[in-house]
Image 1 (cartoon, rainbow, N blue to C red):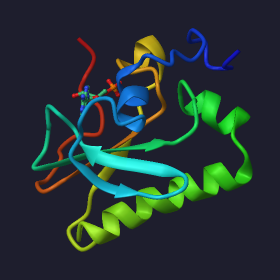
Image 2 (cartoon, helix red, strand yellow):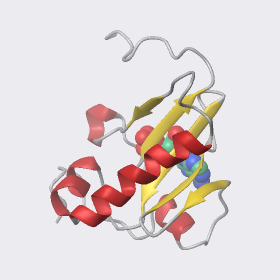
Image 3 (spheres, rainbow, N blue to C red):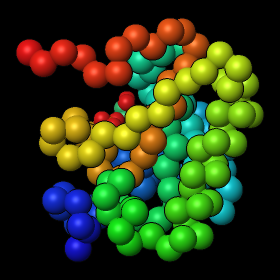
Image 4 (tube, helix red, strand yellow):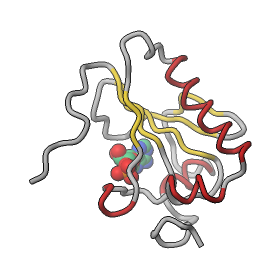
Length: 127
Ligand code: AMP
């Protein structure tokens, strides 16, 4: 069971299908630990998703259950993608939605990487 308050990992989720190559994605990086690809509905000029290769539902699940090598390899990949896309000079934002309040839609842990314009407030006001 995941420790994230979410249902068990669903092997049919869209990111699992991208990992298996069953549906296409505009890939920007792949290594032993992670896959990065462009978001299908970008919310900034650069909007890339980085996902671990393992079956983790959320950040909570990943950080509780993944090995140190998986966690280290994944976060190194996030940094490498930002570096390789030339985002470090002007800056960027990483974000991970988790669960209902977090607004998570796809139940495979992922980090959003946004860049390409000033990104405004961190969280929109309540309402
Ligand atoms: P989240 O709300 O954090 O779960 O975000 C899921 C993200 O996945 C959204 O930004 C979607 O636009 C994106 N997404 C959904 N399906 C695909 C797909 N097939 N390829 C790339 N991005 C996708």
